[in-house]
Length: 167
Image (tube, rainbow, N blue to C red):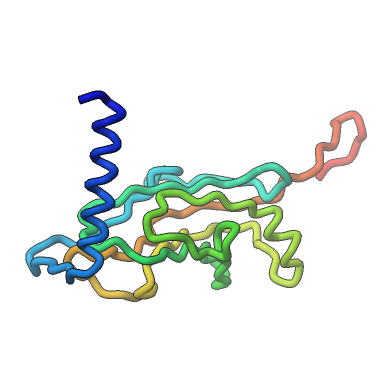
């Protein structure tokens, strides 16, 4: 069988399976682990610093493990150390449940929300499914993730040393 025929056959089988599965109820064994979302960009083990500046989009990426029931949607938020919460991404933080990344133009967001500016501070990225940020651990269902810390800053304008001005 040719590669394109195999791909077409696989696509047809996937479509047939998803169609037949949509009418049946998914049963998750109680012994299954909770679904995990692991941030891969930037790594969860570091604190990344991002500029709030034109043409400086921020990409967050992740992968899933043990998720047996795909969420219908995900919500991505940045929670500032000052307590303010900001939606991440172009769709006010709501994305399809199968998404594995989001791009945030923090500068554009800041320009269009002058009444609630992003602070130069440390943030926690929070990602959760339609069950909400406080949903309990459940076998096969996505567990909320708030393991990533990152910082936002606004770059200062360059002042040459010959100007005699110290900042």
